[in-house]
Amino acid sequence: MLSSGLPELSGVQDLKYVQDALQPQTTDAEATIFFTRLIESSLGSVATKFNFFIHNLAQLRFSGLPSNDEPILSFSAKTYSLKQDGRIKQVSVFTYQKRYNPDKHYIYVVRVLREGQAEPTFVFRTFDEFQELHNKLGILFPLWKLPGFPNKMVLGRTHIKDVAAKRKVELNSYIQSLMNSSPEVAECDLVYTFFHPLLRDDKVEGIDGIARSTDASPSSPTSGKVGGEVKLSISYRNSTLFIMVMHIKDLVTEDGADPNPYVKTYLLPDTHKTSKRKTKISRKTRNPTFNEMLVYSGYSVETLKQRELQLSVLSAESLRENFFLGGITLSLKDFNLSKETVNWYRLTAVPYL
Image (tube, rainbow, N blue to C red; front, side):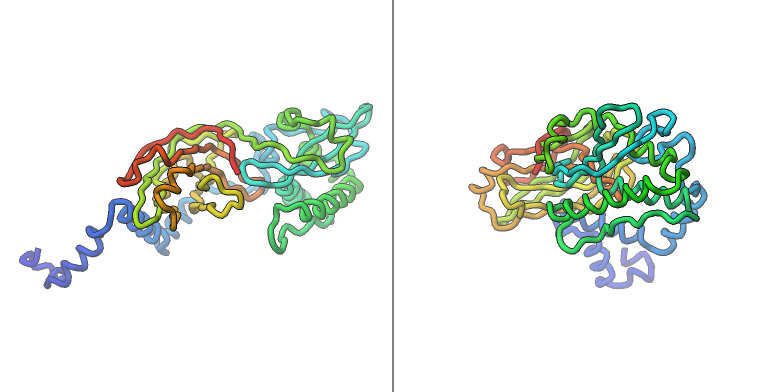
C-alpha cells in the first residue's frame, strides 16, 4: 500500500495506525465490543443525529393523547366510562403490596365502591400508573386546576416499605381531591378507565384477605408472555468470569409494542444481591444488539462450578413498572471454562431475585 501514492499512507507509522485501529491484537470478544462502541459513537455525531431528527419529525404525530384507535392508558386495552361501569360512590387507596416482576416494587390496592354494588372491588395500580393518569389529565384539562401529585423523587432507595407507606397516604389524598373536583374531571372516561378492573386485577391471589389486612403480604414473582433467544459468550481467565451479552432476537410483549430491553444478571446463590450486573438499555426493538461485557472478578473455577448464572431480560418503562421479557438460568458446572463458549439460549419464564 506504500507504493499506491496515497498521501494518507506515506510511511510505516500510517500503516501502524490502520493496524491498531483494526484491533488485531485483541480477542474476538474485545474487538466486537470495541467496534460496537465505535459504531455507537459515530451514530452520536451531529450530522447523524440531525438526519434521525428530520426522519422522526416527518413521522411525528403530536396530539397529546392517543388517537381513537389507541388505548387511552398504556395499561388498559380499552376505554371505559361512567355509563358503562356505574358511578363511583367511594374510592380510596386501601393498602399496598410488595411485588417482584422481576425487580421488587410496591403496588397500591385501590378500593372502589359503585352505586348499586353491595361489595367493593379492588384494583391494583403502580405509582407510575397513577403518574400516567395525572399527566394525561393535565393534557386533557390544561386550563383546570388539578390536585397536586406526590413528588416522584425520593432520597435514597425508592422501593422500600417506608416510601410505599408514605405514598399510600399521598395517593389517597390525591384521589380524594380528584373525585371531589369538577364532574367534568372526576367523571371523565380517563378517570373511569383508570379505576376499571383489569384482567390482572381478577387474577390476583388473596383478594378476600385484603379487606382483613392493613398491609398485604409479599406476592410471588410474576411474569407475562415470554419468548425469544439471547446470544452469549462465556469465558474465564485470570480469576475472572466474562459474560458477553451479544444479541437478543424475537422478543415478545403482551401488548405487541416494541420494548426497551436491557439485560440483568446475578451469580447465585447471592443473598445480598452484590452480583447484580446490567447492560445499557436498547430503545424500541425486539432484536437488540448489546455486545457488552459483564465481568465477575475474583472467582476461582471451583467456586464458579458451584454457582448458577441467572439472566433476565426486562423492558425499561417511564410511565409504568419495568416488565419482564424472559430469562434463563445456567449452571456453570456444565461449562468448560478453559475455553470460550458462544451459544444462543431460549428465554423462558424463570424465578428471579
